[in-house]
Length: 94
View 1 (cartoon, helix red, strand yellow):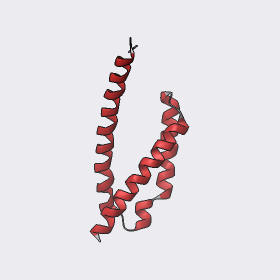
View 2: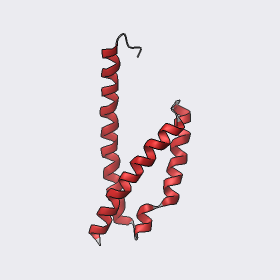
View 3: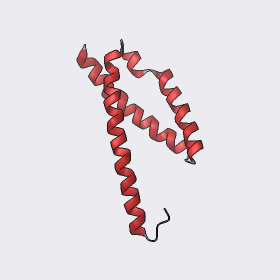
């Protein structure tokens, strides 16, 4: 959609933000479920899996025309926060 004014641009950004937040909430649900299947704190941190995800999202960023560096930075922060959430859940299950 080609916007005709700033208000339309902002409405579209708001719509996209809503979708992103819904997807983050959905991802959170699955991240917290994952803690049930992990056997150790190292398993929660899963550095090899983090790097696997980063490579995947960088590739997808290129495919979709987004900045791979931007996507990587966003994902690294998001994953860091998810690991903190998952670690709390993991420790409370012990």
